[in-house]
Image (cartoon, rainbow, N blue to C red; front, side, top):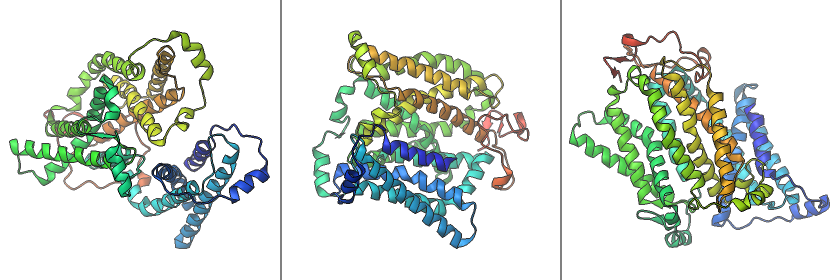
Length: 481
């Protein structure tokens, strides 16, 4: 299923908007065979990296699927060769068909990036499938090891997403261009000067998103600097937080499309410090104590959350009403999913998707907490209710853009909101699955085999083998970590 979905996703992304022209095949073939390799400029490299990332899932999932039908080294080589040829045939086909599409232009550079993405996907599966299965088994088992590895995965994904689309500077001219651009600032980049209150809201979201990284850093410090306490631990935490924040922003500065800001570095550092504090004071956050506050927290957070949604979605141009342009906006609206992402640069498209995921994920999180609070067990059902609520909220927000000057609704936001709410629900289920598996063992935890574990329990009832109360992973209101 994942293999075919990855292929369909590639075809959709490369052939959108599907309004083919009436040119002849002979014209298309003559144009296709006369292509030459363009110079790798900064903008072209951004597109090239995006093409690589787009074809990695195709190579990964097709290799994973077909590898189950072969044995031995020769069989794996044949599968890898077939998937690489599939990637090559796919990119050659779509680049040829792009001759008939507006805003599209066949390119050997795009073909090379797509082909390389397929190769990277194949090598990734063969290089990481063994460790990946062991990590997956550990994550499904739950417990301390699963929590730690889950935080490691989150931390790596956090950094990679911060640096997307990975268009790093590679020449002196690009260095000079970056220094002369408005994409960096000691506190706020000039490109962000007109953001106003939205800038502060986004920095607050960065703080919240960095909290899990801080928990991971606190866990690491506990194992390596257990003798340090008091002010020494606080100073060490601040240094580690600042190093992380500056490191991420340096990576942003080293990308052509990245925006590096001192304010963002401090936001990330604050998130790390708060995460370390959560780890240090983890004994005060036992589930038996927290679950009674779950519903009150959701109710208190609802109005501020809705106010932030209005600000982020409708406040981009200062809440200036423009009711007379409603009919014009409706007539020009494109309902094809991701059409508006297709007509903007890759960095802007990626940033828009990530922002909408962050905006609507709290719907799934709050719904999970609401269902979890009364009994403190994994909620039965509920993710589809969260998805429906997120889609409804997105429809309201996008409809409001019809009446605001300088804004246009994007129907794709409704589908992104649905995915974000589902991810938020599943993330809570994963965290709870790890927490409820914490117990004291005389020996280190060993992951069970992949065949012996159940499917991901984000929406399943709790495992009866886990005992709550005094025999579980928390005693006397404290976690046994």
